[in-house]
Amino acid sequence: MGNCILVTGGARSGKSQYVMEQAVKTGKPVLFVATAEAGDAEMQARIEKHKKNRPANWKTLEVRSDVGKQIEKNIGDAQTVIIDCITLLTTNNFMDNVSGKGKINEKKLEENLDREIEGLLACANRVKAKFYIVTNEVGSGIVPEHPMSRLYRDLLGKANQKLAQQASEVYFMVAGLPLRVK
Image (cartoon, rainbow, N blue to C red; front, top):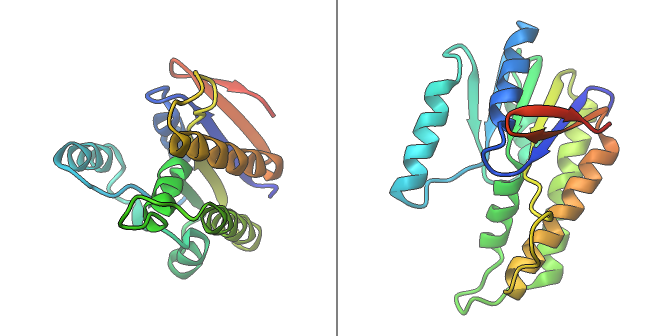
């Protein structure tokens, strides 16, 4: 993926703002791919604030899964693609794989997330656009107490590693400052 930039960091580290600034600098048409879903009023308010911060001429695609396929169907004339974010894409995958009793099929969950990331990577290789992919780094803190939280951290960490290996550039955001890792 010669034209893919991965931007990671903690919550509220400036990842999305940095990526949007970089996309504006290109001066090219942008497809903004949002993976968040409003499960409550607070999340709905966050989504609305995010939308207001985007330039009006950007096309927005809201998807919860099959991101690569959806981008290819909806790319239009966009030459820049922002995916915000892999963290929420992972959450969507988790929610799709939780039974009514709160049980998770770990193998199916891991296979589905791996398929999602592979599909995104394949799309980035086929589509003639610059990709900015946003994700959170959740493995820098304490080990989560709950097994489901540890599984989430581990699977997101694996997805981030796979994306970073394929990306042409990787940035780690700290207090709004991008640190180039790759």
